[in-house]
Amino acid sequence: MENKVVDSRLSKEGDMIRRRRECLGCSTRFTTYERIEEMLPLIIKKDGRREPFDKQKIFVGIQKACEKRPIGIKEQEELVNRVVKVVQDGSEKEIPSQLIGEKVMSELHELDEVAYVRFASVYRSFKDINEFMSELKEMLKEKKVN
Image 1: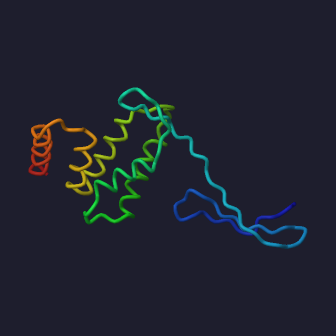
Image 2: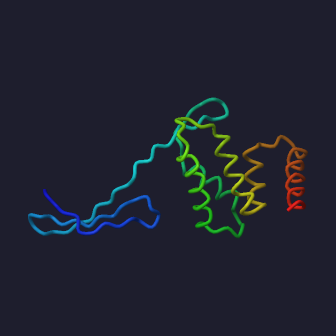
Image 3: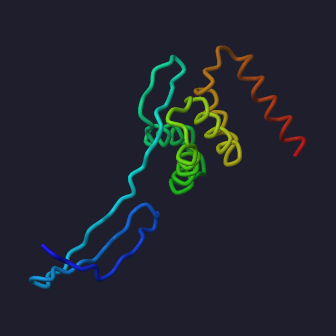
């Protein structure tokens, strides 16, 4: 089936191209979508295991940290996209999970302090209240400086 492209548009997210096509034989029009194939690295977990990068895992972690906070889904998705961009922009075939966790914490620190502390408490797996308090004191020092 031979066809021609009548119209092409980039999706709002910029990750897909929508093309309107027309069959040269019968003049029927139809739409195709082209998605850019992402080459994402493997993630090296703390225990040395490797697993494929999973954007959804990051989003779920951020959602839990932002639960009952004044942070909309759109802001959470934008945060995830910034983290994914850091991962994509690197040329490494494997990256440590710590790099991703630190980037998420950095982004959450700027967005919402409570969400940051929630995420950090799980990510850093504080062993006792003293470690948790140490993190909070550090955050309060930074706030006083700024």
